Image (cartoon, rainbow, N blue to C red):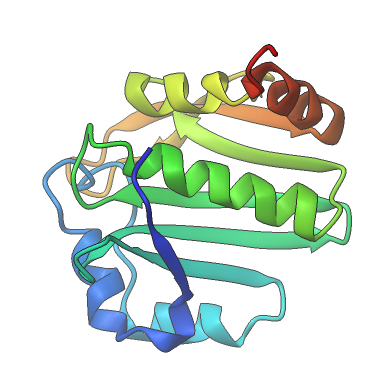
Length: 170
């Protein structure tokens, strides 16, 4: 697992967040925010946004979450600067500790493109369950095609069971 330091997005230049959305493996999956969008999110009490930095001090990824209620969080965006290095897994594990251990939430949810197999494997590996399909739930900003979205949910009890499975047998 890669070691990251997570900093509030409000402490980071908005251009860094915007640039991450322009990465080749991200374009078409997420709408690119403007400077105004980043500033607007930072003013919402419900936003819980963080930038991940690697051991080299360089931006490694992004986590955007929303506290819908004290018991309910949406993981609205996780992205890694480089794919396949464990950054997304590290960010997700940090997010789950933040949601369930630090804030005592009961449920977390997210949506992912049906075609994004890598992200879906990550979410399922930490206990998220697919809860349906939103047919044509996303319009691709690059080519204007519609794509299915898959909603996923994770309860506190699912998270606790996943944590227990991670412990080595003594």
